Image (tube, rainbow, N blue to C red; front, top):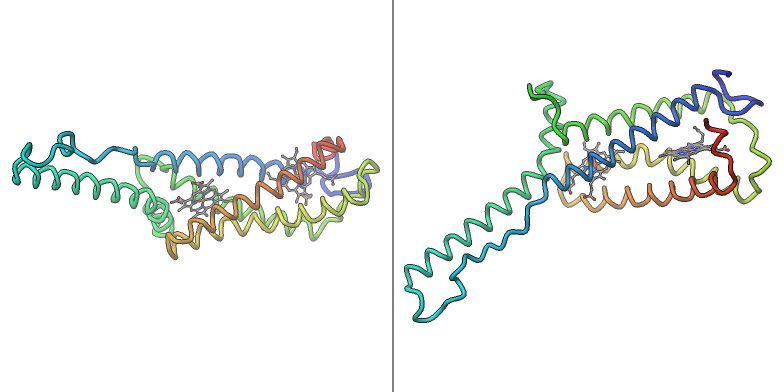
Length: 209
Ligand code: HEM
Ligand code: HEM
């Protein structure tokens, strides 16, 4: 087994970098979705029972009391949703101030740390790729496959930086950028689907093992 890529195929360093990225991304997407469902506020019905009774059934004081209960319930829900959005933001600031929670990292903390690890592995990959030649294409890949794989790989590598960048933009910028972070994931899934379809269909997965 060679360290560098060459006539024999991909070398050990490329393979380790490739599968470490896959493992980190798998963990990161899982944390992302878990974190979201953790922050999800159960859809509680804020209408207190009895509110539907009207007219002579309830006194003005009772109506006011029910309205107040409803307002309090609704603002508590807004606050919890806001807290869920801010959790990654405070994990991000804690990381820079070195103020890590004593009880260990929370899911948002892991999300930030894994995001930064993915950027670090992305940098290593780009540096490694520019210093070692790519191996010759496998004969099973057609001319079109090669073109498609080449572009899917470039897009995947670029997204290793773009996806975390949109995450950072939303925590240091504005919550309005959440759709951009989600759009970046969708582009990632699309490029990954193309990449995996070609390598599986042409049975060249073993080249990376
Ligand atoms: C490759 C790296 C990353 C991946 C794959 C990723 C993935 C995800 C996923 C799957 C979600 C759940 C989205 C949904 O509800 O559908 C999410 C949410 C989120 N991510 Fe990331 N993320 C990455 C990096 C980052 C970084 C570096 C930050 C900030 C430092 C960040 C900040 C956030 C925030 C704030 C949310 C919650 C958005 C909301 O309020 O709905 N992400 N991410
Ligand atoms: C999850 C994210 C993934 C990313 C970011 C990614 C990225 C890449 C990149 C950039 C290359 C070119 C070689 C290099 O520069 O390292 C590559 C090659 C390859 N990848 Fe992936 N990959 C991913 C997932 C997968 C998966 C799940 C499989 C297996 C089903 C796979 C199988 C392969 C194979 C077989 C090659 C060699 C293609 C060839 O030249 O014949 N990749 N990948």
